[in-house]
Length: 443
Ligand SMILES: Cc1cc2nc3c(=O)[nH]c(=O)nc-3n(C[C@H](O)[C@H](O)[C@H](O)COP(=O)(O)OP(=O)(O)OC[C@H]3O[C@@H](n4cnc5c(N)ncnc54)[C@H](O)[C@@H]3O)c2cc1C
Ligand SMILES: NC(=O)c1ccc[n+]([C@@H]2O[C@H](COP(=O)([O-])OP(=O)(O)OC[C@H]3O[C@@H](n4cnc5c(N)ncnc54)[C@H](O)[C@@H]3O)[C@@H](O)[C@H]2O)c1
Image (tube, rainbow, N blue to C red; front, side, top):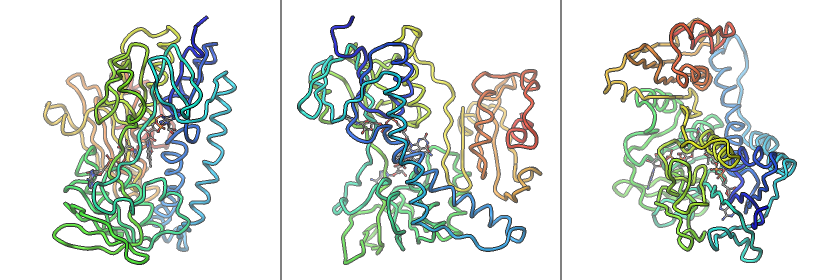
């Protein structure tokens, strides 16, 4: 019997918590989860699930565009209906996730938690609860650009809730959110200007592929302003004047600040308790343990080299769950974590990058996959992939730009993660015809 209220107490209820906390509680471990906002956190409520629902009509209109003449009639995206559909898809998720948690025996505690000592969290300055072990999984929040008038700009959550599409939209930054939302807004008819920080969009992805996406968006009317150096935002009636560059000004109806996300580490008592952190998040060792022995961290709030994505948060929460069940004693051993930007076409990647492979003299195979007969079924014209192999001819990296890049990279993950050799690859028989078959035949 523990002398604490809970064996494990989590701060935050996103993927960094619930994927591991649910199986943990199901084993009889006493688990509490403190959440100040919507249960489930960013991904289901204002991230992945919401965004991919808004993106679905883009996929459909692009498909209809490619098959024009085979399919007749112009498709248009109704923004308000798209937002309403998104809401209908995600509305039930907090309740569903809360149900899974409580059914497994987790106690949900509503409110803002602050560490008082290494075993105690105070909720809303009133109730105090204790845990033998504490897991910090507070995630991140949107950055606000540091210029006069920054409060006029909106974040991705605001944007996804807009009832009406802005006629002219300015997006600050050219990372994931900027490029995905530029794609969605442009397809729905908005006049989009992307004000870039430097010269490159989507720095984490292979730049020749990024160029194909940027060029495609440009032909569709999206304006990209490199080195924009935004210096201020000012309201002018219904419009916002964005000043940038050498005294240039742009009048728009709406500004989306997509200049990154910052970890939630302030005003949480971390200093009081002695939990170390940097501006990139909480410092952990290879057991996801913070500088305080009984306090762990999981998900986006960690300062780490792995991408701050849902699959990483899920893997970390499951790892901690195993540690707390006494199953796993070794350090965390991250698998290959893929990433994708849901533009149209999409860019996806996993394993070593093309640049790394070039430096290391790996064998690099380029495939112009738009030539594949299966990609011609829906008339894909943009489609390239690079496959990187080590000296033993084993796949160590892959990246693709295409409408189906997410499916193609997903399908290659077993080869990457388990270093499959030619004989093992020969034992994989994908469904035919499929993206899987098309991807495996290149190995
Ligand atoms: C617009 C957008 C689109 C995205 N799309 C994708 C995608 O397509 N694929 C992908 O893999 N990733 C995507 N991501 C990233 C993904 O959402 C995150 O990596 C993931 O949600 C991280 O989970 P987490 O549990 O670490 O943090 P979160 O889900 O952010 O959960 C943290 C929780 O902690 C709570 N909290 C914070 N402080 C306190 C406190 N003091 N007391 C109580 N509760 C607190 C918060 O309210 C929140 O609910 C996207 C993100 C955004 C913003
Ligand atoms: N498909 C996905 O998996 C997906 C989609 C959306 C978000 N996410 C996650 O959410 C995170 C946040 O997304 P994001 O797009 O906000 O961040 P990001 O890090 O991808 O991009 C931030 C952009 O803002 C620019 N920038 C930074 N400081 C600036 C400044 N002062 N002025 C102007 N521009 C500036 C950067 O150069 C970059 O282009 C991502 O890093 C990712 O972890 C993932």
